[in-house]
Amino acid sequence: MPANRFNGFTDLGIGIGLRIPHYAHILTKKPTVDWFEIISENYMCDAGRPLEVLDEILEQYQVIQHGVALYFGSTDKMDREQLKRLKTLVKRTKTPFLSDHLCWGSVDGTYTHDLLPMPYTFAAAKNTAQRVREVSDFLEIPIIVENVSSYAEFHVSEMNEWQFLTEVVERADCGILLDVNNIYVSSKNHSFNPYDYINDIPHHRVGQMHIAGHSKYEKYILDTHDHPVLDPVWKLYAHAIQRCGPTSTLLEWDAHIPSFQEVHREALKAKKFIDAFKTPKAGAAALATA
Amino acid sequence: MQRLAGAVIMRPLSRQWRMQRKWTDNRDMNEVTAEFIKPNDRLTSFERIEIYNRQYWFRLIDSFYDDFPGLRAMLGRLKFNRLAREYLSAHPSTSFTLRNLGRYLAEFIDKHPKLVAPRFSLAQDMVRFEWAQVEAFDGPALPPVTVDDLLGKNPAKLRLSLQPYIRVLKLRYPLDQYIIRLKKNGLRGEASNAVEEGSPDKPVRKRQAPIPRAKETFVVVHRLDNSLYYKRIDSREYRLLTSLDAGETLGNALQSVFSDKPDADLIRDWFKTWTEFGWFRKPN
Image 1: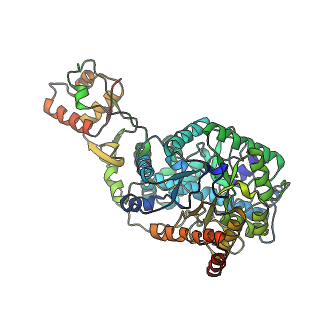
Image 2: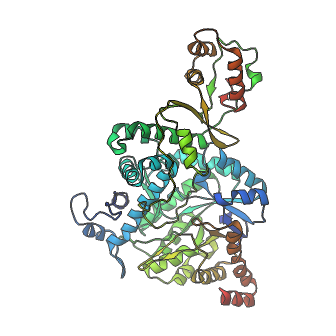
């Protein structure tokens, strides 16, 4: 959805991830970009170059925080030091909402630094929702949770992934960061229909979307974020926009990063599909060229 | 469930960078993984969880390499990878950030000299030097002392402390020059959880700098305008800075460095440089 209570009533447009190879271009050329997404953990430091760059970016641009280490699905106690540092950063960036993943990644205080798939059980959904609420209460901003791409499933699961996502966000009363590429990757790895996923989630809770490239291997697909967005993902994205409305969207490109202009150009392709929501004729044309 | 899955994912890989075939109780891993991971029509339970097991190690070793490029250049790829595997097995990450991954490496090497043999002392120095850079890159900074703050102060009572991010090192090798030859830029890598295929065994084609010969070297690892620098100092500067940072008064610190009459011009030049660089924090 566009502006809603899950994304702090913002309607940001098309953003890209702030990445080190683009620092110099952005700081010197000051290109027009709707917004930048930062990886929160890269800026949860005390001082130094990362924060200096961030402050310069904040003078010119809207910044939205996206995290990779809250691990809402873990059963460990939340790390208070981590939360305090995150809150300090939230105050610095004035991000209207914050996103992190529907996954686990730490166990007994040891961190895998990976976004591990959840066992889709009611007990796990209850625990995850409770942790989302705890973080949101502490940070005093809305949280949206992102579906991850995955390569394994647990026997103990009691529901499918999108039912689990719905269970968590309804219990936590939080929003969804719908990663369309992740849905596509998981649909191939687990043989489900990605359109069913998009059709069945609570659309009014979607506060943002992610798109990205992936890599195909013989027996599975990896979420590599090192390519332009592939056609089937654009088609799925078009469908998601039709179901959820014109939603703020971010392109992720994290490896083999090309020039700023190339990344931005790729991201702006999403505009076609957002425009298509408003004019069906333009939508058909966009899909034909996707 | 998470405890079991975590133990499988974080378990060291085989020498071929694959998931080990036997579990800790000697059971076949196919049997162990089939108990909690669903197979699909293309991959067995073993193969599905192996994707995570491999990515865990590739990601951590990659991050380890980002922080210790000089150590890898000095030890060579195979020895570095073995050290990384042993160290990360003993000290997996206990922080939300990969930034702290190498914080126990100096102690670890002290306890396991064979892993870096025959370059033990060189490796010890390199780890201290490279870890100092990690800390200096984004460590906390406090308001710096200015020349005006020092005017009229009694040296017998004045105590000056270094900024928390500054590291003053005494090395047995000129590693500052060695690293400058190796490094192309001073920025640390971006954190991303996107997957990158390929094992750390991929050779890195780089022209290596010659291994330095022993030569006592004093270096301050600091930052200026948020860029990381190494500044060579002499042994007297080293003694003075470390004495001050240990809490000695300026008077006592100077006495420990200059047994005879202190060289006032030299000391003034030092303090001028150090205060310009913002090395001292403002006294309470």
